Image (cartoon, rainbow, N blue to C red; front, side, top):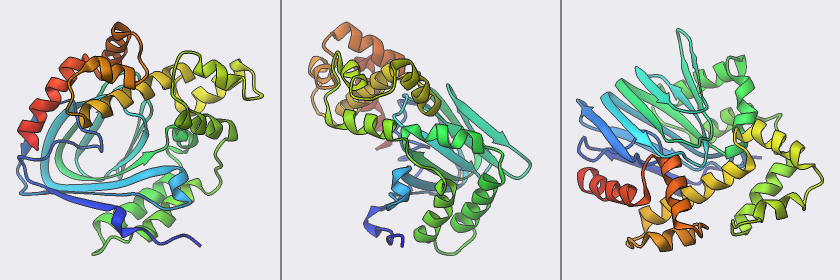
Length: 296
């Protein structure tokens, strides 16, 4: 029996035009344009329970009568599946698959090594699933199938046509997408290993010695699910950790941020950070302060 949803994990926000600063669940580096004619934007996020949380970290939905925004985002540490029921919703960047028909628009956005952009114009009715990084390999072949079409119809009804949103029912609908899927034990071991071990030089080689697969076979398996090599994924992981430190810390000592994120060479830290976010750490921190004044 599936556990009842934890209502404390439901987070609903009503954004006034002057305070809205994001479309996805990551804060944009820079908002290029912002225009709203509706009075409020409602965005709700929810953390699902077991067993769905093996695949999905967050379910979110948002709606506004009229909305226009174009934003640039750093490369995040998750895969995302977006169901667009409004007007224009575009995601531009690496590893983005779009499925557009007369009745629906689905976007599957995989892991990236570069920043990407989002653009929303007009009516804004969207549902998103923030997925575990390896879920691209699970869902890519399901685009265009009846399975996803049926889920899209159910989510539209549950979120935008019913009077009340029942997350327990929604979890059951989404879980059908993963009912025949299992988490690859090697990839699960990889995630657990690097959740418990500091990423440093030689970490990947040490991990490779702990599995029975050859290095070539492991890389092939990894790229099928993550779209990145293990090396680039660990770079992405370190950069995202550095971004969290910059967003949450009052300190502007970038050397300390780099060290805490596993970078021992300051020039290497700056180079990788710019590759994945589009900005140097110093400029990123400066933009964070500007956005905090403009939108928070």
